[in-house]
Amino acid sequence: MEPEKEIAVFISEFEFQVDVLKATLQRLENKLSVFEKESPSKEMIESAGYWMHNLYCAFEDLFKLVSAYWENNLSENGEFHVNLLKRMIINIRGIRPALLSKESFEYMNELRGFRHVFRHAYTYGLDDERVAYLLRKTIDKKETIFQDLHKFHKEIDKLLSTPASCSELTPFSNAT
Image: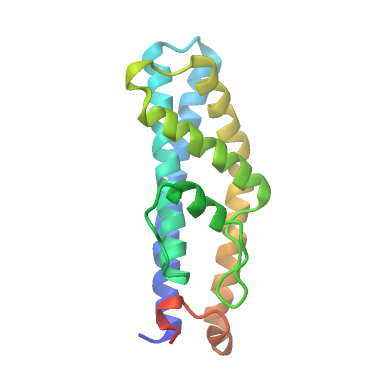
């Protein structure tokens, strides 16, 4: 497939995943508005935790999409999740721009840690205050993260408007 078409496919998949993120964040905003009106029940805390877990999973799907398309190198070792996240703040010259700013990375790393706790909380449950704190922080960081995603999209989108630059940022799958 021609580089322009491959990039167009990537952008479409990227946009789809961003829409998934937006829908998940909307659910979390709805939860936060309930939290602010009343003292949340244990079920509401668990539901918010579930959706924050899902949010990070959706972000990680986006990270995998970026990494697989532009770098073609995903090793599934014990450090996979943190290494994948770290890779998103790196500008890989000649391959792709960074996806996340340092500020977004720091928040994402906190959310990644929460996801790990959530997956293993079957013996002890969730800390209500921690969930409420992270829910507020999630909504507070939303704009910063989407600015990062928009900036990345804009950089990649330039490739479609200037075909000559497609050879500058060619997906790894085309490299020989």
